[in-house]
Image (cartoon, rainbow, N blue to C red):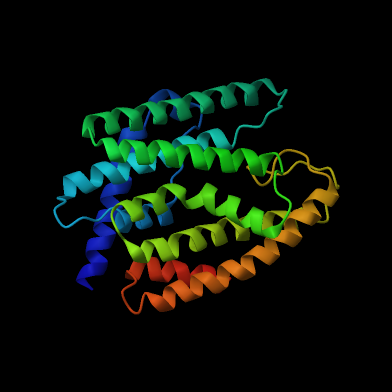
Length: 260
């Protein structure tokens, strides 16, 4: 129970710190606030563990990683074409918000003066952006290629941090848990839009971009269902291999995804 309280306390503190760092009154006026994935924050809290870390050192790294995710997420949801003046303005501000979060994490990394960590962040961001670009451009032909791109997009930074700090449990869990979350969300959107006009717009993301022909949506959904079965098996194996060491908060969230 004490471990659960500590985990919840750290999650609350990291979330509040992130909100304080990323808050900007002008952006809020336009309804633009940074998005953060609580599940990713929990994974980060367990990926960034070192015996000689105090809480200040750990929290600096966790909130910096949260800013990276916020920057990438902000840029992810900008459509390439939009003629509505209000939406164009909001999209421009969203791009600026992403740039703000980027400048914040660069500044914080520079303050840490941890050269290996700076390299890790840089390489992770490149991989995640490349995966998003390939997904957007449909640069995949098989379910296996789609699966790898989704895992790269969703979990590269967390996985690389877990490798860096030798957190084997997170290495086994994070790629499959986060991939499953994204796949479930995407399949739900595709199924909700199934009865609508074949060319109807769908929410913008690397997997769902603008107006996709019906054939492309069907091909994507078919492959996603193939991928999710594999990911479910691998995630279940990761949970079993954790043999009771899985943190309570994380365990509850994983079980929710596994039983969708």
